[in-house]
Length: 458
Ligand SMILES: C[S@@+](CC[C@H](N)C(=O)[O-])C[C@H]1O[C@@H](n2cnc3c(N)ncnc32)[C@H](O)[C@@H]1O
Image (cartoon, rainbow, N blue to C red):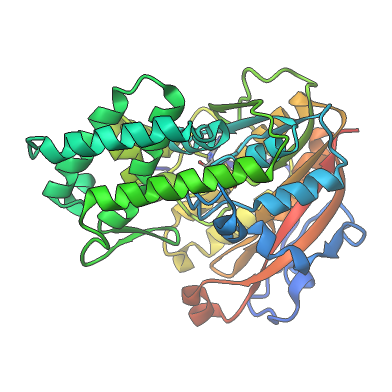
C-alpha cells in the first residue's frame, strides 16, 4: 500500500498557525549546540539542561559489548553497552528493591546488566528475534555434560544424514545461502527443534542463527545490508561447533565473574506504544534507547535470521512486522496511532520539510518524521503510566538531518515529555556525529548530537 506523503498535520492545518520560521541553510559546522536554534520554537529553556559528557561516547554504542561474555553473542548494531547501563543504574542509585523497564530492549543489554546486579527488570521489543536472543542470554548456558553430549549426537547424525536439498519459502534465504549449506542448516534446525530441554535447545538454535552471517552472502551494513561475492565460510559443522565452544566458554566466564546473578526478568514481544501487562505505577527506572530517526530498518537488517529462524511465517508476516515498528524508517506505518503531538516545533519541522520536499531523496521522510514523534509521544505516555512517582528515565537518542533541516530529537523529547507531566532533568551530550557523506556533499558538514535525555515523574 502506498503511504501518504502529505503529513497529517499539514493536511488539516491547526487553527492557530505555528510561528513563522526563518531558516538559514548554511550553518557553521562548529556552531554545534546553537546550530539550529533559529529553526526552533521551543518552550523550555535549555541552557540549564545541557551538559557535555563526551567521555560516554563509546559506551552509548554496542562496541564495548563485543568484549563481554554473553553480551557479545549477537552483535546488535543499534545497541548500547552494558557499561552504560551500569553507569545509569549507579546514577539512579538503583538497588535490588527496584524495578527497571526497557521498552525498546533489543537483545536485552539493560536486562542482562540488571540481572547481574540482582535487579528485576522488564524488557519489551517488537522483534521476536531480539526477544529470543535476550531471553537466551538471560537463561545462560546448560551443563557442560548436556551440551557436549548433544553436540556429539548432532554431529554424528549430520555426518550420516541423507540430506535433501529443499528451497526456503523466502527468496532472500535461497539467494544468499548456497543450497548445500542450506540443507545442512535445515537438518540441524529440525534436529535442534526436537530437543526437549529449553535452555539447551535455545542455546543451540541461537548458535545456528549466529552462524548465518558467515555462511551467507548477506552482510549487515548501516541502514540495511549488502551482499558479499561469496560466503565467508562454507562448512557448516566446523563453524557451528566453534560458535558453540565460544558461547559455552563465554557463558562459563560470565557465571564465574558474576556471583550474584538474578535470572529474574520478564522479557516479551510487545509494543512500546501499549505496554500491556505492565502495571501502572510499578516501575522505578526506565533505561532505554528508542530507534533513531535515521531510516535504519532493524527488521530488514536481521531478515535472514528472522526468516531462517521461522520468527515470521511468510513474507506477508514479515511485511506486517516491518510496518508495525516505530516510525523511524519509511517502511513503517501505523494507521492506528494518530495521537496529536502538542509541540508547535513539530509543525515547524514538517512545514520546512514540506517546503524542501524536492530536496529530499524520499519525501516519505516527512510522514516518517511526523509518525516518529506521534509514536514517541504515545510511548512516553505509556512510560509515564507505568512509572512510580519519583521514577526516572534515561533515553539514549540521536538527532537527524533531512534536506539540511536539523531535527533536534533530544529537545523534541523534552518538550513532549514536559507536556505529558514529566520533569526534564538533564541532557547529556555524548557525541557530535557528522551527517551522511551524501548530505555533506550537498550542504556541507553538520554536527548531529547524540544525547542521553533524563526525565522524572514528579
Ligand atoms: C536502539 S534499538 C535498542 C537496542 C538495545 N538498547 C540493545 O542494547 O540491544 C531499538 C529497538 O526498538 C525496537 N522497536 C522498534 N519498534 C518498536 C516498538 N513499536 N515497540 C517496541 N520495540 C520496538 C527495535 O526492534 C530495536 O530492537
